[in-house]
Length: 507
Image (cartoon, one colour):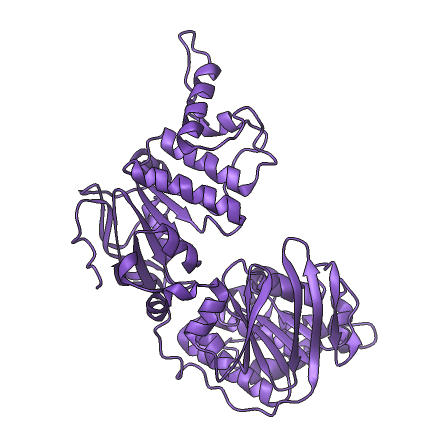
């Protein structure tokens, strides 16, 4: 049975009806979170659910537009991270930012070193306190060694030690296990439980349901910037949590039409990069949209970059219609008919201070040169075809692309690659950061392109998008493909289970 926010016993941290917008983008519209002392509280939701925005409000990076924020029963309005830390809140991020040239002890006491009666830094006292902190946490780290070269796990322990030395009563761990081994995860969990048993409150943000159910006492679900539910871990299940996370109708936004599926166009075999992904093998056929799903950090974008030739790979091969693509050679990949729309369109897909026409024709400029010259007339003529076809909303082709909306910028990136007449389109996060209406337009275009025989590999963190558009779904977890699911069998639950390896005991 769900617990209403704010009604359970004494709360260390409480947010009620919190709202936050960035211009026209609503990040939070009714967020609630109540965290008790002596507890570990999971905060879960899909990418874009609003978890990070809520954490940044707690940490003092953002100020809320509306709602209540209480700490130990008192209303607070943090204007800075310093105020949040001074009030006993600590955030432990996935990748800590220590000073590599300083020792472990110096990092823990940075900016607040104790001094002796002569006004000098009391290094002996600092070291003694660090040894006592590590003893309480039951970990072994040399207080005198430089931070450089420490594992992510050890760096996180140092951040936790720093928080305890500041007497933090509320600790927020944001995806802390993403880069840890099994042994390191167990050590972190032992530390987290000891902190809980000391009377502190912990918030644990993770996509890994097996860890959430093994560690946490309570769980809050967010979706689309809103509070959905809070439950005791004992009173819910992975299946129920998944349903709450992804409970949306996916039929209206996804005008998917049936297209004839042809021969294999893209063939990836045994692709591996040490530390990133391993033994990635799949194919994409003409007319087919293959969805590549998985959680942040699963390795999806890294695979796309290696396939296109931007990044190296250690082993494996990539072929287009039977012709092997040379390694680390994007030009050769393009010449064979491969196109890549990257995840970060502003940094990797566009020259934002250049024109719509120049961006649209960037990949085909050589074909537009006449008598050694590239004229604006030739650029505009070529760009006009694609701007019209993709319905790019702009007053003029010489408009600066950086002034367009996010959706129209995405259309320009698409136009640039479609102008190359590709055989295969890899599109990474096709609708990230664009409004609902434009999302439907992009989906309609992808369906239309597949109907014309284009082979499409679509990487997306949005489950409804994957389920609504893909003919077949590949799921990645921690650098490996863990499942291949047909459109008929793909559901929110089956994809999420494959992405998290959730235990059947919680289903």
